[in-house]
Every structure is written in structure tokens, then in C-alpha cells.
Image (cartoon, rainbow, N blue to C red):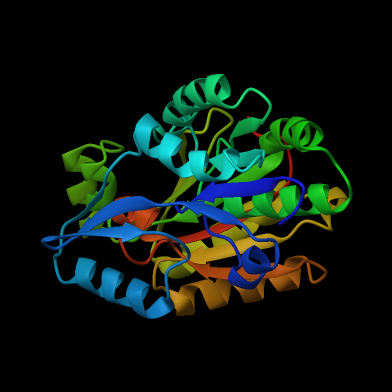
Length: 292
């Protein structure tokens, strides 16, 4: 193990090989699929994700459960009692209570292990945006940054993470309270594809609406071109899809035309986020202009 551990909850999407090489730890999260409760403990195999999104297309209801402070305590305790400090990257506080629960656990564990550090980063992001920050944390540690220095760096750099995506089925956003029932039904009838982003407060914001996937993908690439900054050339770009490979392939081709020098990572969307977006979601996540 390195001189401190890096951890992320499984709602984030990160390259599997990179995660293994850097000994990334994952906080497990539960999700329901049909009548079963499942525990997602690390990066799911594509076959599991394919089954999940096919099930959604067939009408299977999916939802997630929150991680309690006690669950965080149980997870971190086994590492901290061995003297390991931990840098933990959490799903956005604007989308979940995971950050709040982790901070509650930190307070209890600090009393138990006063000589070991637990730093909790509210990424203000999700999915591949968390992957981008996670890879930055790996580089920080490899370059010799202390856990505190890396924490401060991530807290500063998180405001430059752009996470922009399209969704296929508006009913999933309706169930999550993001849009009204009338908008969902009307938009579905008209083949509307909302383009959303995660804003500076870590919340979802609609940036545009397009009819059909072709125009929606072009809009995503346009937004990438506008908000990507060459200063962050060494940072990776994540393209994540909820079993929508052809759409994601098209987006990747367009991104390579706009910025051929970037390194693109591809992942299928974690079921933790996919439970709320539905199948067919496609996202592009990268470091760029400061969030507004």
C-alpha cells in the first residue's frame, strides 16, 4: 500500500486498470433490481451492467439506498486501526447525503484514532467527474504530495470539473423529482433529449434540450469544445454510457476531432447513478472552465 489510501464510493466511474494499479478502495453501496437488493462493491462487470440496463428497458424498477454513518465507520475502521490515513472522494453533496454521513463517521473515528487522518472530499460531481478527480489524486500521491496537500488541491480543482450528459427516458428524471410529470410525458412524446450538467453546487441543471440523439450528441460535443481548456491537457476525459455504446462511440469520435490530443477513458455507468438516469444516458466529464 502507498503511504496513505485513496477511496471512492462506487457511484463514481473510473478506469478499472488505473484503479487496480493505484490500489483504489471502494465504499460499497446497495441498489435494488426487480425484487432483489444487490451490493455493488467495486467496478461492476459489463455483463452485470448490461443485465441491469436491459432490465430497466423491460420495466424493472431500480432504486438506491443511502450509506449510513455507521456503515462508513465500519468500512474505514478496518484500515485506520492499522494506522492508515485515508483520502475519500464522495459523491456530490448536492445529489446525495453520502458526504454528510462520511463527515459524521469522520468525527467518531477521529476520537477513536487521533493519530490517523481521514480527509473527506465533496467532489461536487458524479460518475466520470469523480473518476477525473480520482486520477488527479493518484498523480498527486505519486508526485509526493501529502494527504493534506492532495486534499487541498482537490478542493480547489473540483470547481473545474465539468460533467455534461444526455438522457433518453425523462420518466427517470421525473421519479427523482427533477422534472414534472407533464414535462416528462410531453418530452417523451416529442423525442426530447435533455442536456444536463452538474453545477458549481453539485446539483443538476438543464442546459439545453434537443430532439433525437444525433442533435443531442452534437450539443454535448459543442459544450465540450466550449468548456474544455488546454491547460488541463494532462487530465483525462471520461465518456460514460448506460449501455449506449453506439451513441458514446459517436461522441468519442467527435471529441477526438475537436481535441485529438486528449486521453479518453470509457466506462459503463455505475448502477448507483444509472438507477436514477435510466438506460441510454451518455456523459462527457473533464477538467475545464470554472463551474458557474
